[in-house]
Image 1 (tube, one colour):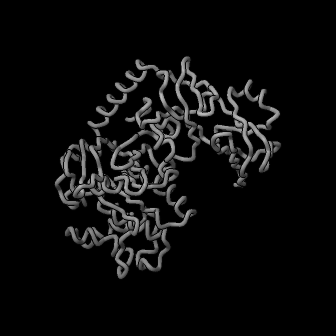
Image 2: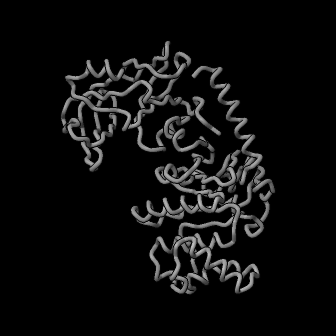
Image 3: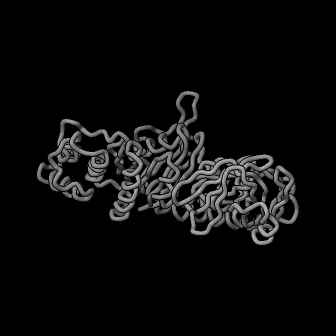
Length: 388
């Protein structure tokens, strides 16, 4: 990408941000949160659109939960402005904000029935008994728990308890629903099922969901857009495909899914030199001498027999010789860990009838197309990928 193209893209992205801020459900400007000498969130600027399923993603301690808690009113920003539908709420308590929060541990009252758990907040607000019961019944039906109104939490599965927590939050008709890793306590199969149900529910309701998770696949599966955070900083905000295909730096490339990062240096004519001296073409115009890495996803590479190297170079454009170090069978796929002369590459291939089969010790070539890699800088700066 040329400097002119990058400038045009940056201008378009800024315009998109400004346009979105007009109709934003949640808007953060210069939000910083300090705990004594620790900066948990550092100068975050972010707009979350009305009706969007938005994920805050990052490793433990990155600042995502603190950001969510500031939106919820459970923490107050040290600096900056926080608005919800245009109203400044940065100093308001949780009950003065049009939001509700669902926590990982659900926080259900164990001695209360499902119905009583869901109506509790309404009764505290002074809603009449009859109206509270009707609204709670509707919310329970919304999460498909009809017939279980009189059960206690201990009589429900983990997925059902999670739905009760959702119903309790939704019964207050929030404009924004905040979810703090609500699926983290579920087993894998149930978690995957609830991902689909949550997404469908959000689409049906049309309200804004802000979802905190450390699970990359969960964020990619459910979200309209994802914000990746690390060490309190907002690194990239993109739709799932852009985030996966065009990470802005090494951290995002490495954190989102599995990847191979091949250290390289930019040379002339859209060519980079890998750490072992091999020169390969890339679809980027970079300053000569720029230190970078090629982000090659395992499924974008293939393994061919060593004898097919010359043919591979002709058809695929690039190949690197190596030895199969490990083979992992996953049913639908096989993962080959291939040892090159200076690093290992992971290649993931589908199990197709007639496809090649390699075993440990086989000499092979790893091949890929020139447009199958993303270029990420070595210093953490952006290459012009989406930051909208």
